[in-house]
Image 1 (cartoon, rainbow, N blue to C red):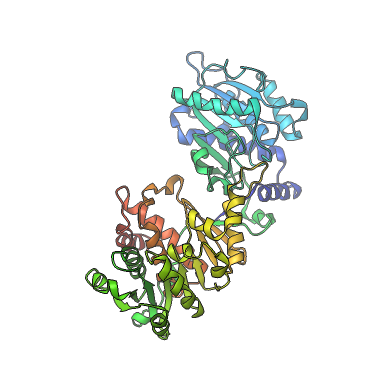
Image 2: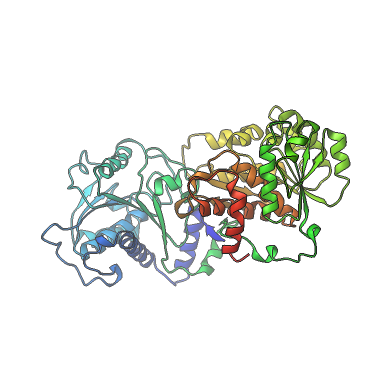
Length: 531
């Protein structure tokens, strides 16, 4: 799994490397600037007219006299601004016409940024970004490099600077102008993905060493455009200097567990999924199909008498058992081979309120979704007090708010400083309170365990799957997780693996996806990853 850093963790890694004597701050800044220029040419090869590498520049060249490529570089008052001065110098050395703007006082720049400011001043002028109309008077560029604020932004952007950043959108609208953000788009909280006031929207964001949490949370992907991560020479061993825990990005399924022994069907577990009443069984059937496809040895649907014939007419490989009330459910759970249970999809609030306590008393691996969560909206403590460590809760935003209203209030608040309270913070707090794994759904799905472990399953950038926003897709996800629990996966691993495979199925199918397609796509996905 790829690690995602906070701003503080990245600073600790850089500082440790510098203090070791392996690097200087100036060297890291130079490598960052080179990485930005390399990323620009990788993304838009047509901009590399000279076919040159910024790290092997042939020296400072005059801008092409006929129709030179133009860049506007916006530098801020910190080391992110220093990166921008390096980018300006390297582009100038490759024959570009470059206009540089500085927000803040050059005399107050940090030492390394101040040094690169001086190196640029030997080549060209620096205009004040805060000067009224200065940016608007610049010639239309081919690219704008946003190096005003990077990962360390801790205060909202206000006033004229906010208007300047938003004005970049007008240039983009004219066509042909590309905005490249250095580390993060200015105005984006790199820890939470939230906007700290008016913000710039980038065409391309170039991050260094490792991506940051905010690139994959909240508005992060929307503001970042395309994300490229560039090495600045920091070896992996420096990651140990970052304060733990470091967040992980889910990037695969554990083949070893999938390829376990298969003596007979019960070796792979028996999942039990409860349905709602007549005409309300579709969601549970979707979950059951997902559990079966992902490898549960058997899957049984617990159906009230009113829907028994309806369900029997719809299923083949799935089994059906009549479950009308708490007593019948308790009797069914007397079968110890039922090792993973799922309650909630299409279940109905009254039925959920009656049967959820029964399953929680059994202390078996349990997924609670949809109605099983909403049924306790008037008294969340009544549910939270019964949960155990083998549970997985899978709320979307509305269900999360009903269970954890105070946490949701903090998450929804407009940030007044950075780092802002994030979806990671909210999910970790919810998992600790619930005493079990919480999977907080969305394109930026966050999964947390009560011990603080946390991961992100983001459907952004190259993993974007907007067609997952379709009725029933969440029910299939609940089924995937239930099936993995039946296979013997631990709750955190089941949630992570199920979420990752859920997105991969959607990406494999593509546009036009409906929920029924997800389980049927799973064999192709598993085959493609050699499972």
